Amino acid sequence: MVTDLARFAKDKGVKYFMISYTDLFGGQRAKLVPAQAIAEMSVDGAGFAGFATWLDLTAAHPDLMAVPDASSVIQLPWKPEVAWVAATATMEGRTVDQAPRNVLRRLVDEAAKEGLRVKTGVEPEFFLLTADGSQVSDPFDNAVKPCYDQQAVMRRYDVIAEVCDYMLALGWEAYQNDHEDAIGQFEMNWRYDDALQTADKHSFFKFMLKSVAEKHGLRATFMPKPFKGLTGSGCHAHISVWDLEGKKNAFADDSKELGLSDRGRNFLGGIMKHASAMAAITNPSVNSYKRINAPRTVSGATWAPNTVTWTGNNRTHMVRVPGPGRFELRLPDGAANPYLLQAVIIAAGLDGLRTRADPGRRYDIDMYTQGHTVKGAPKLPLNLLDALREYDRDKTLKAMMGDEFSAAFLKLKHSEWNDYTAHFSAWERDNTLDI
Image (cartoon, helix red, strand yellow):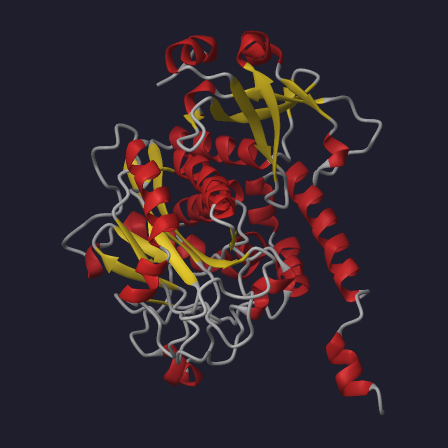
């Protein structure tokens, strides 16, 4: 683990550091700092005007100081003279509680107090588009069922293989890449890790993929639903909980249903209990609700949930248990903030453990064809406003995520919703011009 960035720069030939933090809307903000200045920056941090980013701060606030966390440093494989490093956002000597990485770090510490390490893996889906973002980049990628199309994935080999090579070189243990269920859509996978490390890697992956795509004259997007009628981009999270040494899986018990221990069921119970409120975090954009409440797509299925249900190895539910000792949350989408995604999973799960929450009935039906037979299971929010209202009503989850964060998030997201509703769309003219 790196502890001295100045020494890292000297050993690795790094000329510049990107000191980076992520704001409430998932925007990555950075300053490019020469290696000669990194020793001082490591103590005091790089200064930002927080109001200029998506944080609930004013122009009168003091500088937000981004103090680099040396343990997170990653040398850019495509530009080795530069290294990226995640930062802790501080102001006048105290951490900024609304900053997403700080929210996650606090919840990681909460779990550690109970002797637990939450480990997660994410499965980010994305589209490769033309440079202007107007259409998929491959005109020959036009199959009705394009999932796992070997010709289509090989036509984008240059981008996919380059990014995968970089992940392998970084020691992420990348293990598969594929064409997904929509034309122009792909997914890349690497090994699970502790929640904070997964969030840092997820954040860097998005930066890396966009950079490599741009180098090839393309545009990568994690927008949840960029095209009507096509499957949207999810960001499924695989979750397990371990002891502090990381040797014993607290979720695993072969004597229990699906190999999920009592504590695993309680953690899952917390996810089910808070799912509707979690959607504001896991599905944080107006566009998100075009994915989880979409009609049937061209390929035949949306692969996204719309009801709070769980199952065994069945991809039509919000949560599936594909094997002993872990489960997959299929709710999040590509717009999810990498740090807040991990934070809200831990927050909901810890509350489930503390209250011994029951996940409720397990359903093994095909939710896409038989979902109408399920009675009593909550429906997921229909839009961002409904999700924000659910989050605001969930006092426990808001408190677990932090009062300062929750207030800031709700304020800025309500403002975003109001801006959206003030927008005049083509649909309005097409459908009401002659009324």
